[in-house]
Length: 182
Image (cartoon, rainbow, N blue to C red; front, side):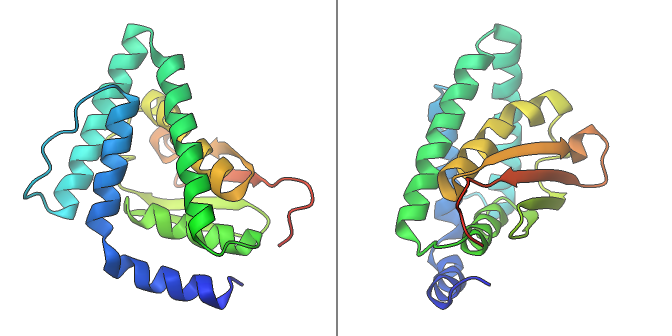
């Protein structure tokens, strides 16, 4: 069970700027692709999500076709790793359960229904990006998921099933570091 201070923070944070978190993520991702941030003024959260899905799909496909995929994936992973560490440093994350709660909160910004248990079993039943990502783009963009999990949880994320590849849900496992407690 997540600690009380973390629960309170995660209950209050949605009031503090879901839109800003999505704008920050958009800016961060555009920088990794070495692209200008699209104009987001006046867009609703739903329109920003759609724009993010299309932008990341188009840029990932460009990187895959242009031979820059490995370098861009490393940049996405490294930036996400730093972001995960920054988030962990700002939240009172003291256990696997705390890290799982923070992860669920972050993914809600992208309208991704993520469940994580203390053993590290991850299930994603709904993903706003899956309908826009072909399998190769989903795998490419998973560099961000892997970085966030490494930074926030200290573990390694490994997918075994994806919605974009025809699965009824995404399944993954966080391989927690040795000695990390529940």
